[in-house]
Length: 139
Image 1 (cartoon, rainbow, N blue to C red):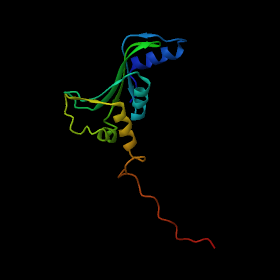
Image 2: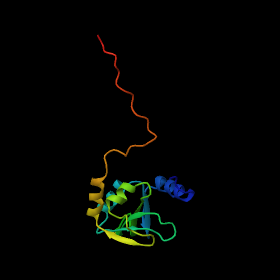
Image 3: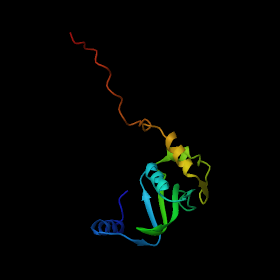
Image 4: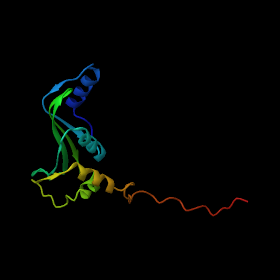
């Protein structure tokens, strides 16, 4: 997913700034469950929720907390879109969460779901099988 022009602009401004102080709410989108868990580990007393909007039915897991020290003073959220992370969503036992609904989770639930994730991605039916072992023997 490519950032919007506005997000790229803010990213450039942040890189050229010597210091950052945000007063207000901040939401970050994360690309994978491990990043979401990292946010949950850093934030103090985070709230973890899984939710599905009524209109699209997409799946999200969000970690949020109030933050009262620099560089961010406000409500901080990190959101993972779970359409590409179905194994993580399933490991959280959210398959019955209907569009328009939310469910509270714990940080420990995120960690347990991450541990339950397969170490290797599932087989892709388009991936060719490896070649058979050679029958030639070295003399």
